[in-house]
Image 1: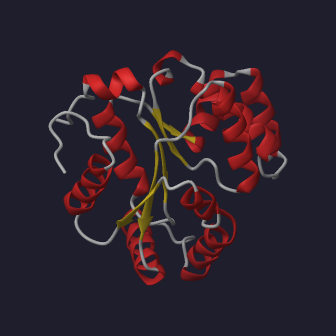
Image 2 (image 1 turned 60 degrees about the vertical axis):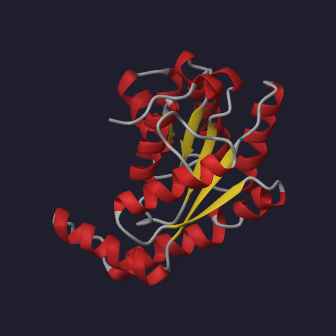
Length: 211
């Protein structure tokens, strides 16, 4: 059972996180654990896209048309979808972003949105995993799921896109002093403990978690 968010955290609203890491870093799993512990929603772009398409919303129809045409969802629409999600009641006291922002343009969009609300990110959790480890994990996952399309070449290309487009946004957040660097190699529990300890050291600890 994950610990509930502390009263201090809930009162201050200090539970606005971004988790960043290459494919295979475990950020999806760790993101769920952190979000649950702090009592805030995990906001993942893939989930937002699917929910809007399935719900037949106006934004979802625009996304579906773009995807069916074989194009990538542009930054402006992605940002609009995320803003719409963050304006929902369950995100009023915090959130954990996973998969957004992916590039500098999206960083600027998120900054503008949060600034208008008088808010800011409290921490950016960076999961550091060596490239070889990421490839090994993704190959193992592909084997476990029986996916033959996830070849080493395809996986390497995905990691190259991350390194080229997403990793550089960490420099922006490092300059703001909010990046928490976490060694992502180890057991699930070990990495989780590192994250909570690092957040607690910054005064961002849910009940039941100590530094």
